[in-house]
Length: 84
Image (cartoon, rainbow, N blue to C red):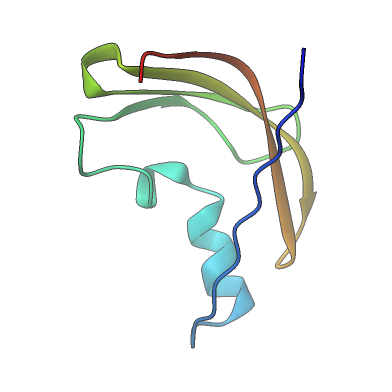
């Protein structure tokens, strides 16, 4: 089994606090294109949320494993079924 990591960086005029607040709530940024459904929570370490989209083409469970306020968020994909 191989491990793959994903990192994303961007630049914005928003404060770190504003960006962090939005990113901690996936419903605010990971919806709007493919009938996405997000259930669960991502507020504190060990919280899990489920993301389903594209009529089942994407189904994954993410677990929040690390949070450094206004600096870092780490989710681990603990289960996924991707048909694409």
